[in-house]
Image 1: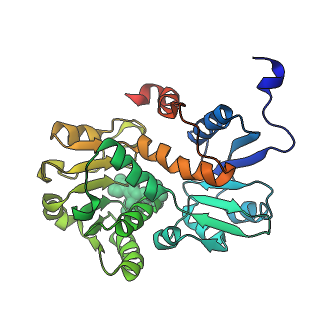
Image 2: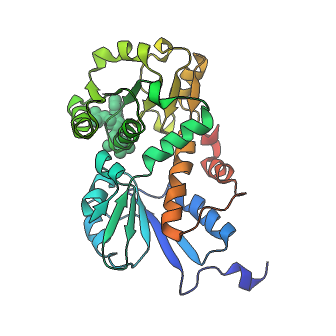
Length: 295
Ligand code: ATR
């Protein structure tokens, strides 16, 4: 490759990024920059880690198009929605945004691509699974659970039960989503979990349990119907203890990396106006970055 072909970031570059605290382990820059390179775009995707109290100031400073947009991750997804002037129905229903676009007229537009990422990952790794006939159990009630519950409710899941260590957080999600969706989303207590698992078509770990290799949620996955699908949003390690237990019980599994890769697609399209080029194996790139955690 000649030096001139190697230089892609010129003065007219479109800049986007990912914002979280901490951000150093984010895989999004690897994914987006691989697509940018393959598409030959004059563009860059960079990490930002404002202090926890500075997110709003940081975002306000980007109004008017200082950069094109941001993906937003822990712990800023709820604040991101609050900063926006307009948002998609899904972000509104979720009460959280993982995508901000800075329009030239100074407005900020929010969206949530986590839920579509989840649904895309299920379609890819558990083909044939019918969301519209499957009761869902979501473990956890943070930002990740919000996006999942909203997307599944919109996709027609017959019932979404949220079980969380801190019950009031599950209740808060259920109340805000059920109001818009006619009661399909409910908060359930940990005492009800076994009975819910026995009916569940889909079980999702949206807690942080299992991150870094520890034990996942203690839910008894063997109680689920044999055709149930088990999803873990944790992708470090890729094969979490929770997914290993699901596999040992003979259940189909969907990993968090697939969800991460799929939420990135609509974000890339919103930033750069083109679809990610085919032929880039971003899963392999992400697995290489995960290193030992990829097994
Ligand atoms: P995120 O935005 O990724 O969802 P979060 O808002 O910090 O992150 O949420 C983390 C989730 O993991 C919460 O549901 C949390 O439960 P609480 O609401 O009770 O805090 C759950 N979680 C974290 N550690 C846990 C633990 N040791 N046992 C049970 N749940 C845990």
